[in-house]
Amino acid sequence: MKNICKMPLLSLSLCLSTLAGAQAGVKLLVKTDMDCNWKLDGRPMDPLKTVNSKVVPVSPGEHLIQAATADGVTKIRIKAEVDQGQKIVEIQLRDEHYKELKRQQEETIRKEAEAEAALHPTWTDPDTGLMWAKKDNGSDVNWNQASEYCTKLQLAGYNDWRLPTKDELQGIADPSASVQAVFDEGSVVGVHVKGNLKLSGWHWSSSQGDASGGPWHFNFANEKPGDAFPLGFSYSMRALCVRRSGE
Image 1: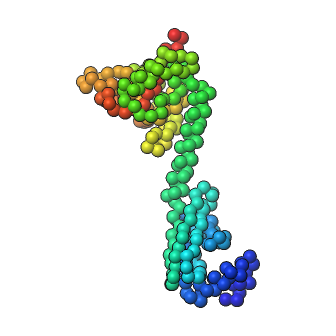
Image 2: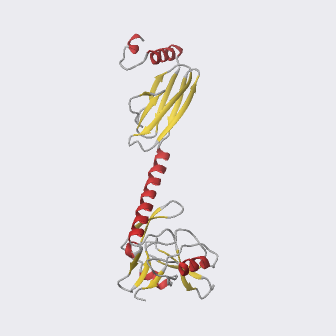
Image 3: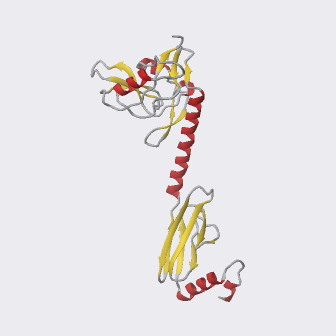
């Protein structure tokens, strides 16, 4: 026990705490689901690996564990109360780390999309001469709202925007292209569209289905982009606006 207190960088109080824990047989057994750096009651400990656990003698009472992933992205704090015997503490970083990395990825994609759309607000398809808004409206709306959004859109000095037909949407589908997009449910998907357009969901067309009388919608996220069955007017989709260039 005397050798413990001779270790460098340990304060007297920490030594006494460790000694008290050892004498009382009180210990913390610390595990982790990701390699991490951690502290016990503010004292840096040796890095902890997923394949190992660490047993630390402590004094009875409450102890604070602070842990961070090796890249420093995700951090957690755990309070552990131990009165006697051995207390098992599991540092669970994996799920939070995945969520944080995903959030950062989504934020990066959104910022890049906003910057691109601000710099180049439109794209003109050289094959058809159609001018497209560089991004959609960004939220789900019903068909009437989508149509109104495009009709009222003022973009790049033009005010004659409209909803595209399903054939026009099909015309900018490109299975060989894959542009990263963030949909509302938080999924990052590749949308197969020309012009590096910034999309955020499925899209309304102005075309009406013969059987149901509802408008068609279009999905660029499919491996083979294509028009889908007609939907009722009250369904929610996105609005991507188009106009004839040169007019």
